[in-house]
Image 1 (cartoon, rainbow, N blue to C red):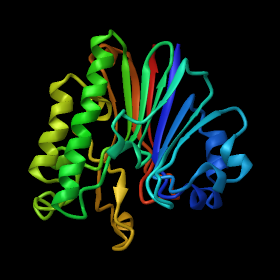
Image 2 (cartoon, one colour):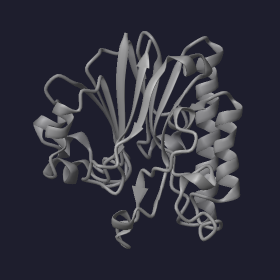
Image 3 (cartoon, rainbow, N blue to C red):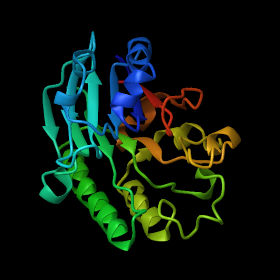
Length: 256
């Protein structure tokens, strides 16, 4: 069975709705769509957004209004939906939804941004560690994993336009890259880089400096899969032609 999965940091779901998000959703052809940085509680949203035609919707919102948040829209019914990683300091930020589908477990995650200072970098790395504990628990139980979201770190120099200038910038700090490297050490596969080892494409651009017009970007959004799904990857793409956010959608097609 083929599954098409899409992940997109929409940078505000209400703003995205005004820019045509629901039309895009209806026409994207995905079985599962994960969105991050929704910045809203479900009661603040239109009925059409809370329950788009053809999709089951799950929401996780931060306690703080207008901050963080994720949502997952699925055409196929999950066996179970879990909110959070089981650790309060992370879960109050509304960053994680886990859908247990029959063939695989799907993580939709908005990983923390470390840009507000060293304490936030430490928070981000602790979140990475906690995520990996939960993910490894599933892998040890024999489950296949798909992890989608905004990881907020560019792993290698190919993943950002100006690596030397950003060597001391959060999102490309050595400790953040090492933290992401622990995912690979645990066996997770970066699906885009697996299929496109030398392709230069980005998923985020700084809107303040109009970086998208010059394609001065970062690849910080990923689909990762557990090792047993490596040979099931049919396609992994970055859709930088899609506007509406400072990020663009990414997609993964699996045969499972």
